[in-house]
Image 1: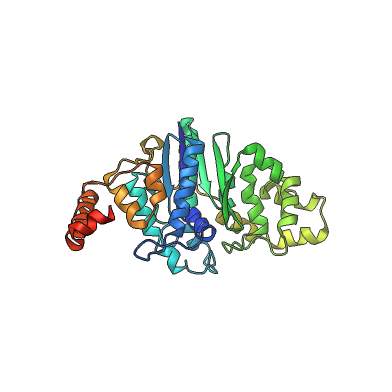
Image 2 (image 1 turned 90 degrees about the horizontal axis):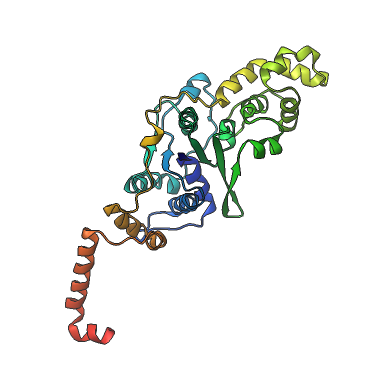
Length: 318
């Protein structure tokens, strides 16, 4: 079995900045939702998963905020025209009967980790779709990443498995946590070790491995004394940053991979929702037809037009 799990907030955010402004007939912004659905459709075709689910963050503090008050403290609020699209996306996913996963006190990353761990334990394959590199630490023999990137207004996905990751980074995926522990992550306000940047952190992890190994032999390491001093002074920050960067694969996610289903394009309300959003492309691709409610409304609209225009005008128009 192959399960595909998407990082809902991350992909929606990537789509928002990667798709030109679009609006529904009623003026509601829809570009992020449209971009998300385009990515989903493409991956459904390329990956052909047996099951699909989508993980979302909740608008409440997590255990990381309790651990460190500065966690993500610098983050700006979500733009209003993006925030309004989150419930629209969730409604659309529900219409497609795709499982949505949320966990109070945890982030979507933790849900991705917990689900991928469940898949691995069952011997199933897991495809994680995300725009963040945080999840690279989850890459295993059974879990690979489709990393969503936006370049010059175009969105693309790059596949990462163990060989691809090690070729690019020079160490195993689980050491991504240690890399962040040393260099920090400004986007999440993870401090890291003061004075240790990405280049130095990459070199340390490639040569010596985990922060436990680095600090376990720090006096003997073949490194500059200035770097050794920074590491010694910043050990507490490195340990804290490791805890913040580490995805909790034991997050309380109450689902079984086999319970997640495929996208259902036969839902009666799916046509109506896509039509209200002006997503005619997906209506055509999925060969959807109006439900009874929409068909009845179309008939009433046609009758109103005939009565208002007069039969001669209608015949002339035809």
